[in-house]
Length: 121
Image (cartoon, rainbow, N blue to C red; front, side, top):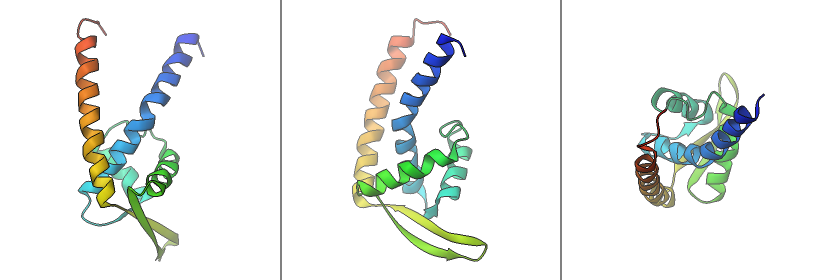
């Protein structure tokens, strides 16, 4: 792997850290009922192409962190077709965080886009 490829990978990893949390909160805020990890990953793939970049395992530590921060809550239900499933739903505090994070995301996106306007791809 060349130096520029390594730098790109590092940039993508840093960039995805916050965006996955934001996208997870958004998916759960729009869900009519609690969702388990696989369903959350599927919705992210359908709506937010590339947010997870095919790394579903990256989802679970983020879900645990968001729950630890009080932004999500979960419960476990037995499954007929395998191990028990942990279902997540967004809390009131999570909805507040989502609104703040979405505003911060849009402001950052607009600011960076305006700086990048003169740069050719």
